[in-house]
Length: 327
Image (cartoon, rainbow, N blue to C red; front, side, top):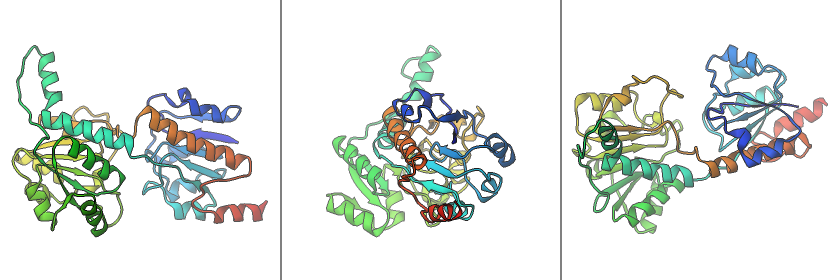
C-alpha cells in the first residue's frame, strides 16, 4: 500500500528509530504544508494510507471527496478538530487514533514562561547588538500563577509552579477546580477574579465549541500591569484579534505564544513578532525527539497492524465492517 506522511517540516521522520516499523513499505514523505485542497489532493491522489503530523493538515470532506483510493488515516497524537471524523466515515476512510503525552508541552510551557517573565530573548538580542543588561525581568517565586485548565498539562504546570515557590490559582470547569482543590491548590470563584488576581496566566484548554474564543479581549484587559499571559494550547481559545488589540493599546503585559491561527508562519512581519513584550515560538510544544518517537511509533504501529489485517485504535470501526462487506 502507498503510505504518505504529511508535514515533516524538519526532515526528521526518516531519522526516527520508529521509522524502522515501515521498513519494506512504499512510503512518501511530504515536507511542506499545502493549504490548497486541490493541490494537496493532486499530491496524494494515489495514497492509500495517510499519516498525519498532529494537526498540521486539515482533513475535510472536500479533501476526502478527492481521494478515492484513501483507506486509512493514522493520527499522531490525539484526534482533534482538524479532522472531520464524520466525513471520514461517510467516505469509508478508517481513522486510527494515536497517543498523547503532557511532558513535552508542559516543559515547553515552563520554558516559555521563564523566558517571558525574565525577558531572556530581549536580553540576548540586545547583547548581539553589543549592549549589556538593557532590561530587567522578575521571578516566579511569590507570584500568583493562574492556570486555566487543570488537565494533565495543567497539573504538571501547577507542580512546576509549586517547586518554584508560586501560589497556584486554578480556573476552569467545576471538575477541574475540584481536582485542584483536592491537590491542595486554590480555585478562583469567577473568571473575572482569576484574570484580575493572577500575576501569570497560562492556558491549558482543549479547543472545542465551548472553549472557542473563551478568553475575551476584556478578560486580558483586566490583567495586572506587568502580568504575563502564556498560550501553548490553541490560538483560537483567545477571541480573534483580542490579544493583538491589547498589545496595540499599549497595555503593559508580557506575552508568550507558541500557537497561531494559521500555521506555519513564514512572515517575519507577523503581527505578534513586532512587539518587544512578546516571546513567540514556532509551535514547539510537542516537537521534541522523545515525543516524536512516541507519537509516530504508535501511528506507524497502527499502520502496520492495519496492513496485516489486525487494525488497532480505530475511531470509526464501522468503516471496517463496510470495507469487509465490499470485499
